[in-house]
Image 1 (cartoon, helix red, strand yellow):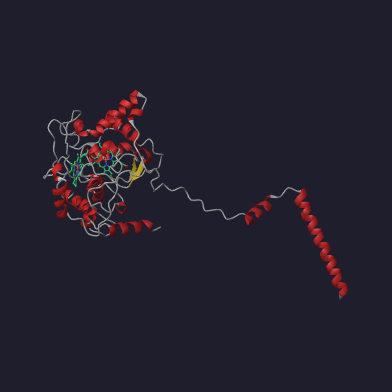
Image 2 (image 1 turned 180 degrees about the horizontal axis):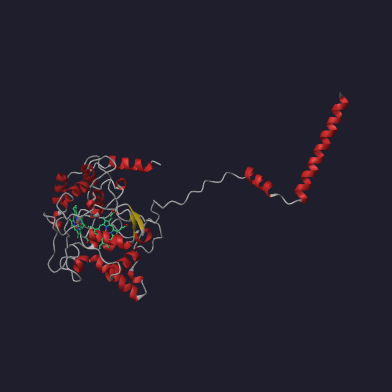
Length: 350
Ligand code: HEC
Ligand code: HEC
């Protein structure tokens, strides 16, 4: 019995030494085989993170965007073209409006700058900072990829209630050159803080045009007039206070016809001179005055082809059909919280 145990022990020691010698030989004298290194890295390295494609950047990265200056453009021809584009944006109606010097009645009494303040450079004044960096892009309103030319023509046909310009025309080329220049200090794909419009907080009731009329009389009428038709100060050749409704104002397919755009524009920019860090109106006043102005008569646009996918309509697009079950009335005046929540929940579904 003891003898067998001893033999077994000897055998074990011998076998162990043999295996050890073999392993040392492999380790020292042979190249590691691929399967060995694979296996080794597999058991020793941590599981790699799942690689996701980079997301488009939803959060603004540039906190204090300032438009570049045309004075810094050294090429005189380029600079001249961009100055012309800026002039057209600041005084559009002089060139294309009711008494336009290039073409009469191609557009209404508004200038691009009336809504894109300081020629599209004002912080939260509907500026052009993110245009060069994000176009061409897909827009759900048209259901297709839009170039900057198409986007400018959208505003011409809607906000200016006019006829689209040929993209090869000197005027379109100049405006787009200027708009591209305004956003030229923003990296591709990014949207700086202060771009476009700041949205005011939702009310938990519908916006009230009756109360809005009082806000209008108090805060807006002195400039835009009781009848909303604005005012031409003698010798100016264009509206000093642009019309807010009626045949010379934006039509019902325009961005400002959506209540959140109007309320956001007005809260952080009106009465003229208000800014995002020194607003003069409360959220309530902004929504209510928006409801009042947007319930006044204005030109109609054929928007039958807009929003080919009804589920992509924004919460405050006031024309059906709707994919979310809320009424046209609620889409026009709110309360918007419940509509937005439902749209967001539908978006979150896989
Ligand atoms: C009545 C107001 C108004 C006028 C006038 C107007 N726009 Fe606009 N524009 C808007 C609003 C509001 C938006 C944003 C709409 C939205 O987000 O739904 C916009 C958006 C744009 C954009 C896209 C901005 C971005 O960041 O995506 C461009 C470019 C533009 N407008 C150019 C012009 C030009 C050029 C003119 C003059 C030919 C003009 N607009 C006249 C109200 C106006
Ligand atoms: C002190 C005069 C003044 C007051 C008060 C004023 N605005 Fe304006 N508003 C202007 C001027 C000037 C512009 C054009 C700005 C520019 O071109 O730089 C303008 C532009 C607008 C626009 C965009 C252009 C258009 O015609 O659609 C809207 C909308 C607007 N104002 C709404 C209002 C509302 C609502 C109020 C009241 C809460 C108000 N404004 C109060 C002077 C005023």
